[in-house]
Length: 323
Image (cartoon, rainbow, N blue to C red):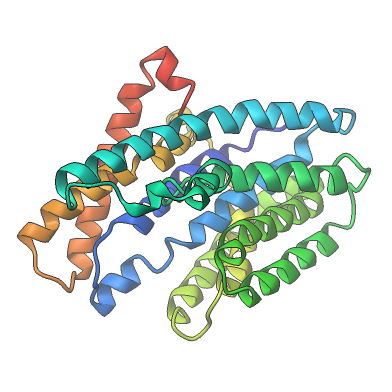
């Protein structure tokens, strides 16, 4: 199968990375307005996974499963292990200098080290990388390299079943790895169904974008009424399709999208550092609960500092390999 570049996904990844920043601002408690401002942040986790599932449809059917595993290993795990080490060291330094003068007791338990190595528990956001690796190598054997390039609607529904299972398991594995798997499978199902009809989608791009906006509006409106990740699963399809249907005419806009896509991994990896530092500053200057204006300003500043850091790091060839 010929690989197709979806420039809309570059823009979408950049937007999703911005949304992920809002998940880790460390400003609690919030007013109702502050809560509304960040109500869509968690949605971006499923969005990232759905994009990954959609793009799995573009992998050559003749590539062996082991070749695919090696490719994903070298793409994800060196980055994961390096940043795990970075965060383990930084958190230890923070504990000693600012938070009691001694290491967190979890550093002395075998369970913590196993979870840090295999499940990304060394930092709040790193769980995504090993979970994505496990989900991709597991599902690739079934729905990609096993001749399953059809029945996209069934795969989409299977993603919904997995979301139900995720909500039913009130534990870390249900909330994180199983949720990611559900959105990966959902994105794959959408990809099978949609890829032959991309040109048709582009004719109705404004309508699809309107549906996506309505879905996200309902997501915010029902934020306290529907628990779990059902709202995310319902909204992810229209949002994904609206960016597949985007057709950039301007080279400048396309370049912005490419830059946002290229830096999205770096933003995801780096943002907890400026977020934590700025939360300490905001905590000194503003009394909680934090309003929508405070949350929004902090969010934009953290993202801006993170983006600047990533752009500077990408100028260093060795650092660029780990972003």
